[in-house]
Length: 486
Image 1 (cartoon, rainbow, N blue to C red):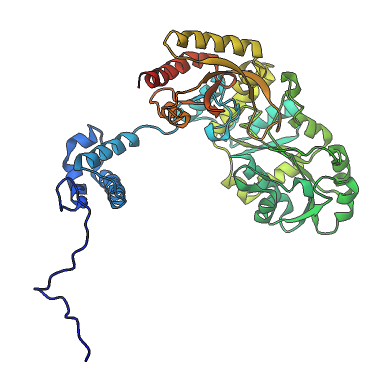
Image 2 (image 1 turned 120 degrees about the vertical axis):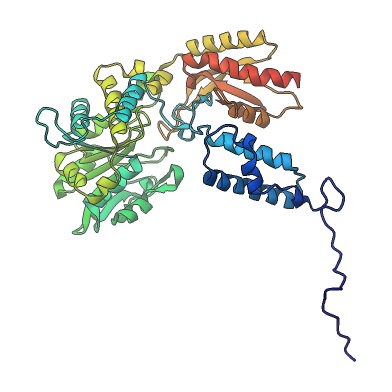
């Protein structure tokens, strides 16, 4: 005989399950959650900000949803806790995330911190262009439409000897555009050792595919000869590509053809030679004690058809992709439909032009921050570090001055370092380096990004402009002195 289990009815006793409790025994912890309407009615949460109801409702909805998830994970939250979170969310909404900070990492061109800091003249030029109408595509003399590249082309022509120039939003776009305009549907020959991946998963083979060109690798990873390129040229070849190795280097048993050999081969077959030099150097890095980094003018002098580079690395300007070279190739690139999609805006062009004027006046090493930092002497950095330490020692903060090694960063001059000096703080066992570094990063004014090394926090002076020393002092004092009294 089969026994049937009665279905729960109105009078059935429900199954008893364990429930999380809040402050009141037996009460669901989710009862602590205020509704979005309750948060909207609480005027203290918006704290006088002119936040529209619809925007506030979406923001508070996210806050409540996250609080619900935290309670489900076992976190004890009260109504006041959730209200405090809502208030913090409103405050965070009006605090710019991209605000000024102090880079004390020892990495000059730090990609995660915005790459090249700009000169005062460049900042002023970008602000003026952004805040008013400018003669972007009109000739002031004739009042007819002109090219937005007129000034930049003239400057680069004087600095490098290039016949023409084009500026787009970054170097990845410059490479993609050049390949799409000059080699779509054809084969592009590149050394196997240069089919590389650089930062952010940017792979040369992937870019070639996106451009519509077909990659033809020649040689081996470590040795490629000009004869390898020559044997690969055929009726479907559209260009020869050379890629600077950017953020790594190969040493030992290596061979690569010279740029002049590659240009001569291209001329023989009427093929454009495209070169991605990456860093955009206009000055020789050997003058600051580093290995020589290829310069834009060297590539132009060698006869490269199109050289591509970043504006915000060793050039020291705003983010931009620069294409320089022979007029017939640059004009063909400029006419491609993709050129409009990736072109630079007026603020970028104004900033880049202002940066180039530093080079034209011979003041780049003195006035462009990237070159200022690379040119700083170890003696001057040690003097600054000792002065900062002495001031902080008076605040009962134990810091030492140590020698350090700074890098250029941004994929420029890989494997090379510059001698530097840093302030070093070793916390007690009760305070971790990670927590101290977090507190420094979260300061409202002049947050500091340092480097954790061998159990201590280091603040490298090579990447801190001297004008930021006072702010660095104040930020370290606020966080480190509080640590010692905790």
